Image (tube, rainbow, N blue to C red; front, side):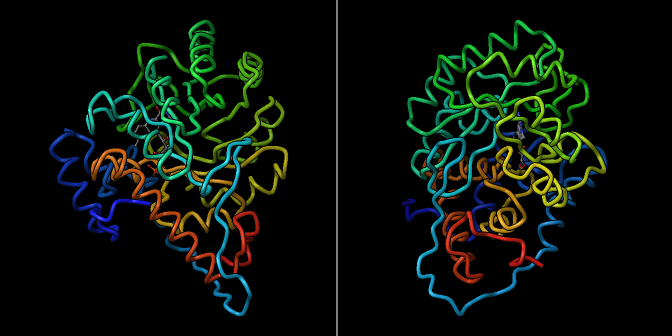
Length: 334
Ligand SMILES: Cc1cc2nc3c(=O)[nH]c(=O)nc-3n(C[C@H](O)[C@H](O)[C@H](O)COP(=O)(O)O)c2cc1C
């Protein structure tokens, strides 16, 4: 369980994280704290939150559920709740120094969930994340250079990553604030056959991140993905981009059980987690909330925000009559 010294109100968490992030970051504090941000006009950034805010629950109280079960598995990995730490690039090292990736993985382990490493991530960074004991997966940019992509895959495999993800939306020259622009390498877009060739490079489960349409979701299944992440990269990529929670239902419908469906972009509360599960997600990922936790208190701060999300999720499940995360269905959300 989380340390009692941390606040339990999100407004207090953000205000403490704000002091730290403003000191340690130059340009990103406002975006990382949700005050403003995203690419271009910031429309996608605002809509990511508004779309969650527009959804309300239908209460169901006459039932015999006493303790809703939040445990689940993603790609065979057991988690205490369907929540993971989203991949973030090394620029987040400004929060806690060179140990930041490791602290995220340690926090994930303490909370019983999984974490991802963004791009770039060295073999040593991945190894130290995996050594913390949490399930860790590596997210690699859609590198045009085949050899560089394969080298990154081999490093991840050797380090013990449980899956390989590719953020297909991270295209060189099009990245906005909040992500490292190029890493000195040229990224996609990649054609379906190029993605398929990259998928064949690994025996590990393969995850495509940045799926925002039924068309891409269907292609993801065709090229052999095992999971997709419905994500607009936390609004970093495309101005006037639909929120992921809006496109989720039709994507979940289209892919059925062919792949696991994960979602990120705008998740801030346990209620958001339940909304996403109800509308077809198997799990969610958090980016900025994990940064608040890091700023609050390193690995323990990360575990604290993850625990809060799980407890809020469980409370909301009780009040909507959902016995287990697999049983969340659209009828509880209006
Ligand atoms: C500082 C920062 C760096 C990020 N770097 C990456 C990255 O390297 N690869 C990636 O796939 N996504 C990256 N993302 C996007 C996250 O994985 C995730 O999609 C997004 O943060 C989810 O939205 P949220 O912040 O509203 O939770 C980054 C996000 C942030 C905030």
